[in-house]
Length: 210
Image 1 (cartoon, rainbow, N blue to C red):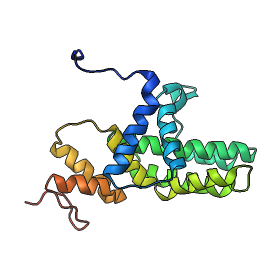
Image 2 (image 1 turned 90 degrees about the horizontal axis):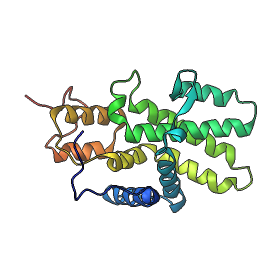
Image 3 (image 1 turned 120 degrees about the vertical axis):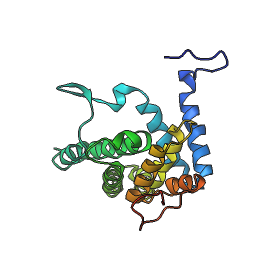
């Protein structure tokens, strides 16, 4: 592992929430995304929370890990109470958003890709929005979950930008961007492809024309 340069700063833990706030605001501005303040605040809090592995992962018989999304949905449907069901749906939405936003490249090596996470996360937040509106203080939370559901793919693009470090894109990176664009219609991927001189086309089998 290379040593950090003398000029490279380590982000203090105390400023992590501020860092995510600035990063999310910057990415939203770059992508012309507008969200209610409560919704962007929810996303920033989620990133801050999940930066701690003990909050992101669960204790399983095999150690720390993540339940499959379908199992989370099943747990929500079979939960003994509305509160348990809502809590599980919320975790399903949160985990789906975080994984699709920060681990989209890793998902390419999994049986299910980023579009599956987008679909499951949007479903979870949409269901949760309908369920909490009748509860005390549920209207405000319901509006947040509804906006998260409506803008799930947009928020994945925002988090992709937050997580992406500056680097030169290889042909493999371009193919992955193209694959994500084909599966999700991501506007961010389309914009990045055009900047690289690649015009997205649904009719093409590959972004490279010979």
